[in-house]
Length: 315
Image (cartoon, rainbow, N blue to C red; front, side, top):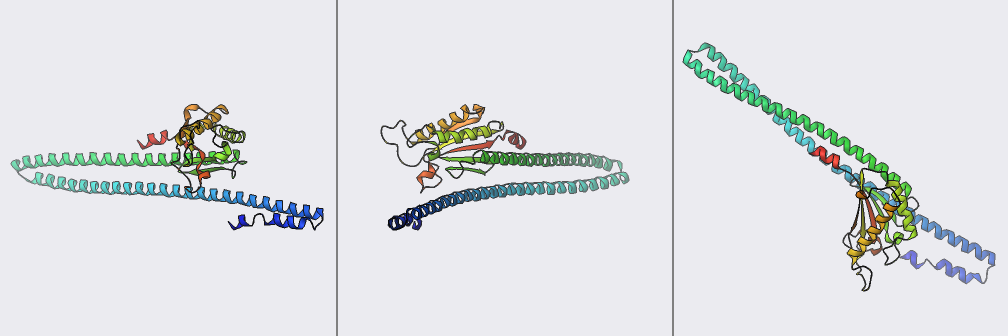
């Protein structure tokens, strides 16, 4: 607030001295003031880029923590299975000892006793066979689980690497717009391209202006060859109610119309498969900052990897 209160001080000073200094001196002061303004604007843009980068790094760290927790739980499960297998081995060893004892008794006893021991021997043999079958099944199940876990981890790593490369490519395509109402962030395995309404739409309009079209065309070209991602375009509004007589009924209607306007430009300016695009309106109900209406009025293009192959592995 202090910076705003003193923002016009240089202008006032220049105005006061304009009459008593040469014209050339006045021009030098005015040029220096404009240079200071440009430097301040550049610093603000760099600060916004730095904040977006910090948020991205924090989201990446949260994602890594979540995966580590999943791996830790899988390790605990495998440890439990191993202990169960060890118990089964102990049972087999005990049954084998019983079998040997009964066999030795059989060799030393009489005929009637032998028949009883033969019956017991067969029963013990069947129990032993059952335990061995159970142990074999458990061992195979554990080996299958380990192989499936390794495949799943490999696929996750490939998806992460592919999404990181895609994020870098999208950022490069939109370099001229980042910090001007556009941010590109990777979190939770997805890429979020957020565009403020001031970059896309004139006030109260659902038609994208020329500057917004340029950003969307660049985005479409960067992702059109990605066959394994799904694209969700979400429209968001602020909490202000729609005025009577507007071309749309309410904020739900407005957010959907703006999302579909963006989808049409993405599709018409590239070879993106329309079956991979979804348009949706979220109205006023998913704000990014309840205290900043301008930030809440936005379009979010969410790029998500196709996880069908991972789902098949989990099954």
